[in-house]
Length: 189
Image 1 (spheres, rainbow, N blue to C red):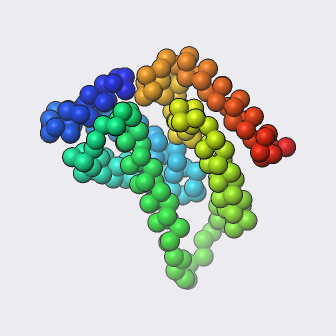
Image 2: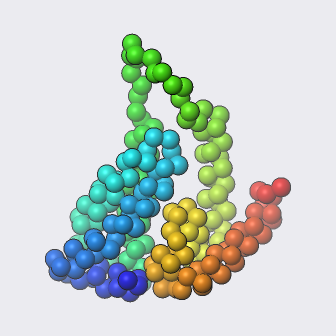
C-alpha cells in the first residue's frame, strides 16, 4: 500500500470509520514492530520488549487519532513519531532499573557493554544525530528509515512514494552528502 493509502486510511480513521481503523492497524503494526525491534535490539536485553512497545504504539495511535491534523506530512511520519517516543520511554525505563542485591550469583559473565563503551556509544550517537541534522529533511528521513530503522528499499519506497531503485539512488546521494559534511566538520579521519 502506498503512503497515499495510509494517508487515506488515517483520515478515515480520524473520522471514526472502524473498518479503516482496523485496516490502518493491520498495515501499520508490522512496520512498527520492525522499527521497535531494530531500535531496541541495539541495547542488550531489550529486543524482547519490541512486541510490547509496538502494542503501546498502536494504543497510543488510537488515543491520538482524534487529535491528528493532516499537515501535509505522510501519516507514517505521525506513527513513527509516536513509536520513537515509546521506544525512548522504554530505553529511559531500562536505564532506571535498579539492581537489587541477591544471594544468587549468575553463572555466566555479563557480556553487555561496560561504562566506558556505553559512554562512547552515547557520544557517537550524538555525533550521528548532529550529522543527520545537517541533511535536508527528505534525505534524513530516508537514511533513518533505511539505516537506523532497517526498512528495506521496497518498504521505504512504499512509505515515501518512491520506487525501490529511486530509494537506493537517493540513499547513495544522502550518504555521499553525509560523508562530505562529516569531512568538512572533521568528524571522519
